[in-house]
Image (cartoon, rainbow, N blue to C red; front, side, top):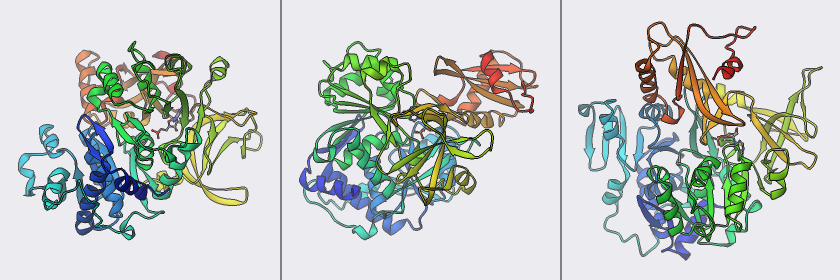
Length: 539
Ligand code: AMP
């Protein structure tokens, strides 16, 4: 698998085929290749060093074009979606420490509107560059206009970069920031070979995609969530078309379903929550989506209820459950959901490891306190070994050594990723997921560290202590509840609103707890730690 050359093959062999389509626009393979060549050349000439480049925007064709340009110029890109709050975006820009930020839509206007910066602090340097706080913010669309030189990007293949310039096997291909428990997001580093090893996996739980072309993939996840890597790169590597639905359309299921119908999706890639939401539309079924062959899910538990309804409404479509963390490149296990699984007492399994991956299930032996491998049906932590385990967290040695540890398995010493997920392997070698051993939760498909919300809550002057717990219904999380200890705020509607509004400026809206409970003091365990379990019984 050679991702960049696969895209080039499509540009040569099927130049007019769409690579990407969304409400924001579309781009054909030849245009994608040529535009990214031009941007790559500019990057090579203007951006020095190895630090990642933030690429900001939403679901525009310029996003994938700019990612490819970075890869061709030998640079790591870091996708930042518009749906992230401005403070988090500023945090990421500061953390990556690159003088340049590439924008597919205006970020400065947003910062000014939100009064994070003043208009007179920014300087328009040229048609495509704005300077603020020692950083150059480049408007990619204007840059392309400037550097195109009137060359026709629709007819002949442009080759300004050479393979020597491209990101190498062991270089970092992309960095995706995930919620970190300290309130600072962690930048997961994925190498080019991690990505390419992952891409081969798709044929193990689907059909022989790389010998087909022209398939259509649904893109639901924002590019800053690694689930998007599944649809985006499998599609680009197989000469497919990414059909991307923006945030606005995702909130209007009727419009969404007609868009997907119009575009004849073959592969559906989303969180289970998203498909569950679509099930509320009676016309979401095989009659409408005639060409749909596969549902691919990842990122959170696939409930039997959702799987069963999908299998009923889509008799010709397979449902695949996959599992994996960003730290090991999207997904490391997968399985087709069968009727037998739905009838079983157990939950839907996450399946078997992909080739090139070994999952160890490690548990602490109570008597000896030694870490040992769990036997069949024994519960332990899922620990991932293999060719998609990423290169740790960007400039965060402490968090890296906590989660990425050297272990010797079968005589070979290698780096393993400790997921913090609990699970077991049954007697048939099938793996089951049982939830988090730490305090990370999934709400509507979003990965959230409860500690992240807490550390932002206590940044609010009036809040002394904070604890956040999930409110559950059966196995799924319905909402988040924050408990706060405060002397300065009265327990009323206005104070709750005030706390929520403050939080919204610091963390994404989906992380802001729906319910805020005022406490005089935090309940503690015998060890003097906050008693989260007790609080869960109070919500
Ligand atoms: P992320 O890095 O955002 O993809 O989140 C990774 C975490 O999501 C994993 O460590 C699991 O806790 C959870 N997860 C991913 N896939 C599944 C799945 N198929 N079933 C249950 N939980 C999942």
